[in-house]
Every structure is written in C-alpha cells, then in structure tokens.
Amino acid sequence: MQNEFYPFINLPLRYPYDALEPFIDERTMMLHHNRHLKTYIDNLNRLLKDNPRFQSLSLGELIVLTAGSSRGDGRDIHNNAGGVFNHRFFFDGLGPYQSGGPRGALLKAIEVTFGTLESFLDKFRSAALSVFGSGYAWLVYRRGSLKIITTANQNTPLEEGYTPILALDVWEHAYYLKHYNRRDDYISDFFSVIDWSRGEVNFLAAN
Ligand code: MN3
Image (cartoon, rainbow, N blue to C red; front, side, top):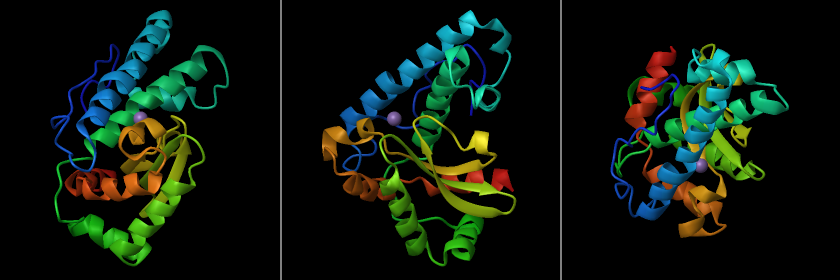
C-alpha cells in the first residue's frame, strides 16, 4: 500500500466507482470512498498536524501505538487511523465480478482450517451478521493459521497482532442505499466482488 505516512491523501480506487455493479452500486462506492474515507483522512491529517511527534509513524504504527487510548487525541488518532486503514484494505480487496474463488495456497489454507470454501463463507457470513452496530468482519492470519474475527467501529486486526487477509465493512453506510437494513443481502453481494487474487497476495506476504 502506498502513502503510509503523513500527510495522508485519498488514493484513487483501483477500479471505477461503477465497476462493482450490480452488486455494489456506484453511488454507494462514490460516497463511501469520497466522503467517508476522505473524512477519516482529513481528520487524521488535522490531528497529526497538532501532534508532530506522531508524524514520522506509519499508518500501522499509529494504530498499534494508540491502541487502548480511551480519550483525547490518542483515541481520536486511533479511530481515524483505523478508519483510513480499514477502508483502504476493504476497497483494495474488491474487484469486478469474477466467477472464480480463491486458488492456490490460500484455498488450501482455507480448506485446512474451515473444511470447504462453502463452510468458510457460511462462517464468515455468520460473523459479519453478528457484529452489533458498526464494525468489520475479517479473515486474518497469525502464527500459521487462518481465523475469522470481527472488530468494532474502526478497531483493526493490527492491534490484536493479526495480519488481515480479507475485510468486510458492515457499517450501515456500506449498504444502506441499496439494501436498507438487510445486511445479509449485502453480504451475498460482497461474496460476488471479492478479489481473491488480493487475498492471495496478502496471504503469501503474511507467511
Ligand atoms: Mn465504511
């Protein structure tokens, strides 16, 4: 990922806003990237401008260093840096519809951990549905094994020592325009636009 250091900029997506149609609509992608993510980036830059001692830290270092801050700029830096990391990671893992699922080493690891790809997708769906309020479902890797976890709000797997492989944003803004409150339908659409080649790259880098 580029632009890991202050000042942060809202990098363009790897694909046009309408590339995920009809699964994720153009307007949702535009607002999600150009309003929601942009706001986290602007807030983070403003906070770091006021806290120069943090300016030399990478995005990941900022998240880990401020984890557990319950108030003040530390908490705000954590929330906004998490918002930047999580959205970038989520968007980067999507792509135009492809019929293929995971392949190679990642498919093998999924089958070892979850039995079958279908079983993994079922468990991932359940985890994503279980997030109360706002947050994310993740496929993560640590010490040789895969795991499904959820994080609340803009917390990230990084502060828990996990390497993320795949992310799903289940904040309502990610699906409300198309699906209203039906998160389950959105999860089905998400499964159609996972760019598994990105997951494979993340998995190989984590090993
Ligand atoms: Mn979001």
